[in-house]
Image (cartoon, rainbow, N blue to C red; front, side, top):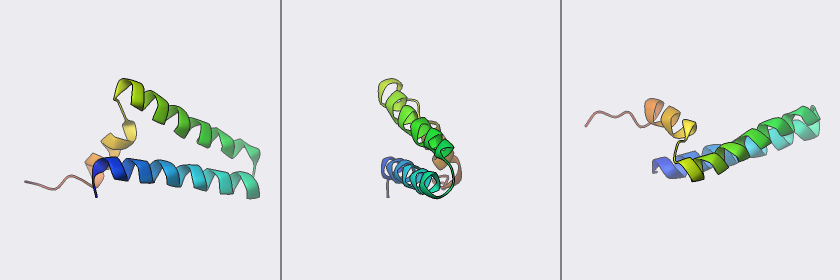
Length: 64
């Protein structure tokens, strides 16, 4: 799995989790959905993605 697929999977999971939490817990969880959406938008414009940095650090740090 590539880093791009991992970022998409992470973003989709966060959105679905926040929607479930919104439904069962509190409408404030929609702020997490908005944050993920904003992050995806700014990442497409600027090329800077914090999730990619985190995934590279912890999951894709294999020595070559």
